[in-house]
Image 1 (tube, rainbow, N blue to C red):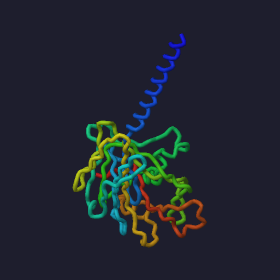
Image 2 (image 1 turned 135 degrees about the vertical axis):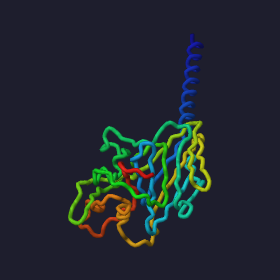
Image 3 (image 1 turned 180 degrees about the vertical axis):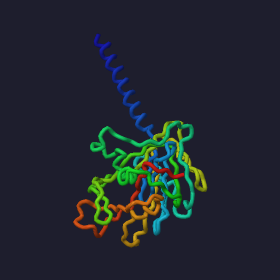
Image 4 (image 1 turned 30 degrees about the vertical axis):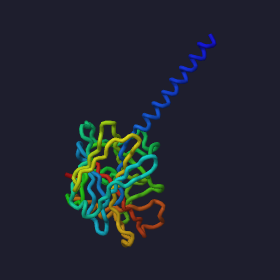
Amino acid sequence: MKKVSILVIFVCICIATMMVNNVDVNASAKCEVKFMFDGLQAIAFGNPDKVTDGILDAHHHTPKIEIKEIQKGREKVIANFEGKDLYKKVLNISMPNSPHKPIRYYSPNMNKDTSDFRWCLDIETDLFQKQLYLKDNFFTKINFNVGTFYAENVTEEKYQFAVGSKIHSFNREIGRPTLKVNMGKDDSLIIAGLAKEIKLAYQNGVNYSVSISNLPSKDMMSINHFVFYYDLMKTDVQRFMPLAVKKASFLPAPIICDSIVFGKSRID
């Protein structure tokens, strides 16, 4: 009887070990691509089949795309593009054979979840409650055909928007739009439209990050970069400018050089 008990215990230990190993394998099998957006770019959701990022052609700003491979906490740059490499290019980002379309992450309660996409500033829904229509005058356009958009890096302080002495009712923190694409074992993410097609293939325990930025040089004079967005709009609207709620005065204005969302308009 004692031998039987020992045998049962041994079998249980073996099964438990196999289960732990399977968990480890599944954890390492995760492979995702994270897209981060920084600087002047308009991310438009008006087309249900794709999301398009229009990088603004703004003075003293330089569009850049940097792609990194990340393994065991170590990052390696595998591609870098900027300026003339991207000028008037139309990039298409897709996962062949994937039936999924890009979506936005909404939680049951955004106040308890700062990843909720509604923390990002949607200039049409949050400020004007109407479609503003965008001119086709971008430095670069990037079409996303897959992935989940969510919010990240929510500001510590609240913002309001002002025009003259008029204060908009908007009064909250603002998040930065981010995109994540999860890949299965047979998947690859394709970035087409550059001089050479880029393929980010599934690899066990490997993730990728793609930084898309459009920032000014360090010596650029202090101006409110938000004004560049109003030059994009076909619709004539009051030019509400961002203002940190805690500021005692309107001047100097806070400099917001960040990506915003157009929830109703589309970029073709």
